[in-house]
Image 1 (tube, rainbow, N blue to C red):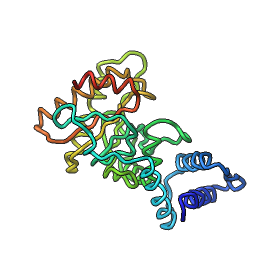
Image 2: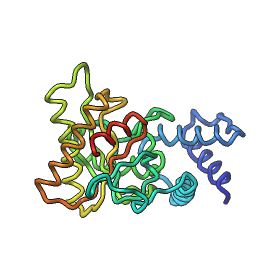
Image 3: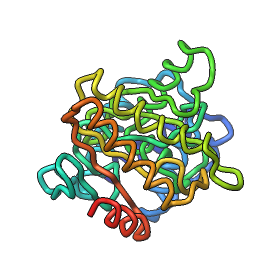
Image 4: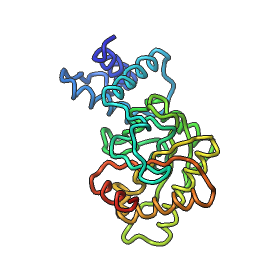
Length: 257
């Protein structure tokens, strides 16, 4: 099947799962089809699905990522020994693990086509990621604590693993407790990565954006915590600070120079 045919197959299959969607028409425009498919992925609860669906979904998502362009670790230049800075779409980075700024439910973003990193990672990993997270949370029996981390396979992403961590939600000024919880996110991810023999980790800007942490303070905490971890543990793990916004690129450049 062509990419267009794969997309139509997936949309029809997802619409058929919900009686309320039975009368929904599939748009003819390709971009509108892509938005509809992403929205359907976003709102779908974790539930069983056929092997045929997964085969089609995996082929479609992997080709979509290939067309966006995959960045290899060898394409990056270190800012410091074992520390890199890269601006781009984290879902296209082929490193050992990427970090997802999750919420306490740990099931991904359910808001259709939302711009958060949680939404993007779950969209392009495929529905298997939400199912894997749901299984972890069912075993845990409670919501994820702020500052902790979980690891899952990355499924259709070019990386091997996803590290999910819940950053603090900042209400008002950044408190000492907020700073410690944010630092704990970085330590927890690094510790979990090394326990799973992960050699490289790409960190997003945890707790900024939707969680309202000031970009400059969050970056300072990130860089300081990673440096301290590497020094205190003699870790050789490679760390990539992934940014999307120009302002974060400027902040991290200044901190890492």
